[in-house]
Length: 475
Ligand SMILES: CC(C)(COP(=O)(O)OP(=O)(O)OC[C@H]1O[C@@H](n2cnc3c(N)ncnc32)[C@H](O)[C@@H]1OP(=O)(O)O)[C@@H](O)C(=O)NCCC(=O)NCCS
Image (cartoon, rainbow, N blue to C red; front, side, top):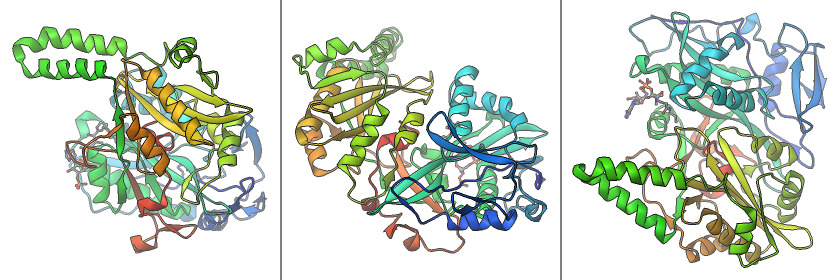
């Protein structure tokens, strides 16, 4: 028997505010939807919600966030929406489950459930939750759907805010990133994933959200997403580079695991060695990186971002109009605080900042500690890009595998990567050699995929996207 709780849940609302130097053209439905629910208040020219109990204020010195100042959330679903989660869905389960919208009293249980996905550390999970769902620049309150069994949280899917821009002058789309799907071990293989997603899609559509996105689905989520109406324009085409020495020790490790007699001892030693060596970024010595680059004075390494300079550079370089994430001060300032990652920044400086490359490694014990990802890479010239890439290889040294996503890179960047020895990683999304891929889904019923568009660009066409690993939760 499946039950649904409704009406008094707190809902986050995704909303679009006028972005500097850009034109807000979408999210009309969101505003219209909200205005339908609680008419009355106009904020920054947008009719949003009807209570005077919340204000617009700058948080963390960078973004606008809406906060309620009474018990009644401005995003609370009113009685007119009580049917949101009340229709029985086709999926049936043996025991008694209900799907509800997240409420703060479930936070501890969510953190515990996420010890099956994010990390074994409750402290780290709390930091990640706070960063991603409570301090998200584009959503005022966590937007998460929970499966409960006898009052206990046994499954979840979260939606965090993102902001795409495309076209010239850029148009803005504030959307949702579906992530963090986890079902408790004792409740798997009962169709709970579909149950949660069906409820979420219905609810999000009523909230006025047009599209949901995912850039980091694992193989099971990827395949099951396709069966739930998502479309995948294509793979992110991950590419890798590793030094000859690292290739040698990884090869030996692989051989050792194929010979049971060898594998236990040799495998343990080699795994320990690879893990120990892998702590590259935290231990990266800026002076050593520079000296390996023969004291190239244009390049520097830092563990802190230069958010203002980086966003100014992104603006200066401009865009070819493809869909990409807004990289303003607000976004970058928030993005590099991700507690499940550690970042390192390579800067190429002449008169001013002429290029940067962002390296990232994972902090969770569950994650691959041997990988160092190039999550963003910008430069005003091929020379800047080339020297930054060389510096990244030096930072990775013999200890880390360098990975980046090639799907959206320009010809110049792809040539530099090929010249530096980067190779495409073989595989296909959703297979044994799963590759990260873009997933998109419209929440408008019966809208054919060919009409899923933003700024006149087809969302299901990979050529319309300018994607970086930074935009995904892989980075
Ligand atoms: C991935 C996970 C959420 C799946 O949960 P689940 O309860 O088994 O999912 P469901 O029973 O609802 O099945 C969902 C779909 O995946 C398929 N599926 C589930 N496990 C699978 C597996 N190991 N291999 C292939 N397909 C699988 C089901 O057949 C079903 O397909 P359908 O939608 O076409 O009917 C769960 O295994 C989990 O929490 N894993 C740990 C965290 C994780 O890896 N999360 C994914 C992050 S991207």
